Length: 371
Ligand SMILES: [Zn+2]
Image 1 (cartoon, rainbow, N blue to C red):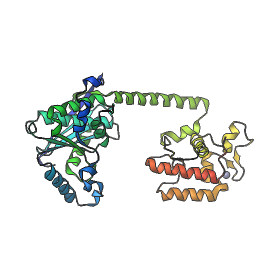
Image 2: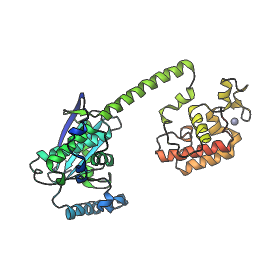
Image 3: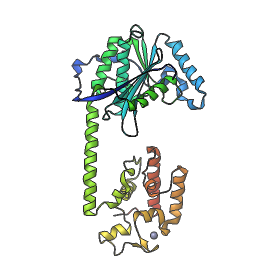
Image 4: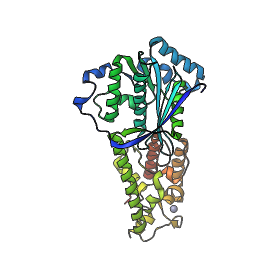
C-alpha cells in the first residue's frame, strides 16, 4: 500500500439505544430529499463500465476509465471510499480511505452491528472527516460505497429505518452543504483501487485494539433480540426433541436445511415438500411410528423405509431418481440428502430450483398423498 497512513480504532457500544429522532426534529425537510446527490444505480450516471464484466478487464484499464469519468465530470470532488465488513467469526468492522492524502482508517465495531449498520457507520465517519479535515473543508466531496442498501435509505426521507444514524449523516450533509456532497454506488470487487483499499482496511480492522464509542440503532437491537430468541428457542427445541423422541429427523438435518424461498409451486406440492423437509412424510418408517401401517420396512428393498431411503436409495424409484439426480448435477450441486432437500450452503436461487426438482420427484413417485 506504499505510504498509506493507517489509523486503527475499536468502537464499543455504550450500551445505549440510540433513539429515533422525530420527524419534526429531522435535519432535512421533505423537499430537501430532492437535493440529495445520492446515486444508487450507477447506470444513470453512465458508469457503464461497472455494469459490464469488469473482472475480465486489466486492472489498470478499469481504474483509469473509472477515474477519467470522475475527473471529467466532477473535477473538484475529493473522493472518499467507505466499506463495512463482517468476518466469518461474527466480528464487524468499518473502514474508509481518502486517496488524496493516502489516509486509511479502520474501526472495529460492536459485533451486534449489522453489516448495513457498519456501512452507514463508515459513511458517517467519512462525513465527519469531510467537515473536520483541513484538506477537505473547502472542497466538495464524493463518497463511494459498495452498499446499495445504505444509499437507498440515505436517499429516501420516507424510509424509517436506521434513523438515528441516518439523521446524523443528513445533519452533516446539511452542514457541509447538500450540493457539495455526492454519494455514489460502486460495485465491490471490481478492480477499483479505492474500493479495494477501503475493503482491505475494513478487513484489517477486525484485529484492531483501540476503542471508541457508538450507539446501536433500533434495528440492530431488534436483530440482537431476534438472534437471542432464536438461540434460546433452538436450545429448548433440541432438548424437547431429545426428551420426547419426536422431531429427530429434523434435528439431525441441523441448521443446513433452513428457510428457502419455494417460488411458485402448486399448494399440494408445496405441502408435500414442506412435510418431507420436516420429517412428516408418508414413508413407512414414519407411518409405522403412528400405527398407520404395520411395518416400517420397505417391502421392495427389505430395509427401513426412511426419508433418506426414499430420496437416495429405494430401488422402486430408480428412474425418477436418475432424473432428479441429473437435474441437481446440472445445477452443479452435489448429490446428498441435505442438497436434495434444498439445504446446504448454496445460493437461494439454486435452492429454489432444487425445491422445484424435489416437487417433480415427489409427483413422479406418486408420493403427494403423504400424511
Ligand atoms: Zn425401498
